[in-house]
Length: 156
Image (tube, rainbow, N blue to C red; front, top):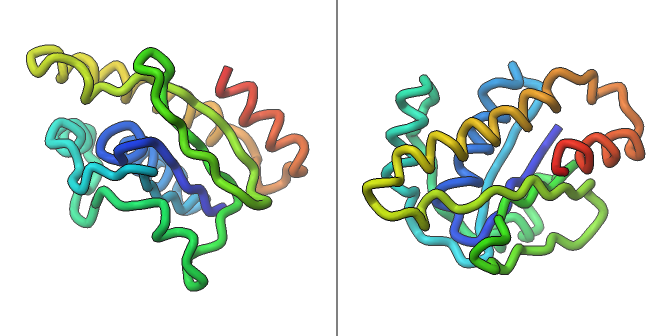
């Protein structure tokens, strides 16, 4: 299953979920991430946290979601947005037929610098739990309707 994870800056939340889905799915999912207004670099605390959790960090980049609208881009089965609501973020909308889900969490990069390690850890824990709930399912055998229902349930 191909999943695109979207948020605004593509430096923290979407990067974390991309890594979790790709590396915890044992080859069942290939995830990418992008932003509607990419920061241009992955937040350093994202890289620190992922390394601490044993995830590879080489090749992680902050990129535009426009990269995934090109004719040669991978076809997505699902698009998950992870933007929060406290900062009144504009959450990107992905057109087309893939399943859509919103697993919103607040942006840990918006925390004060001294609070960022804890904010990133909390964000990681929330996204990891959502990913684990999905990965525990036989999603390859599920209908589109059942998958959409699961995505919605996990997001709420």
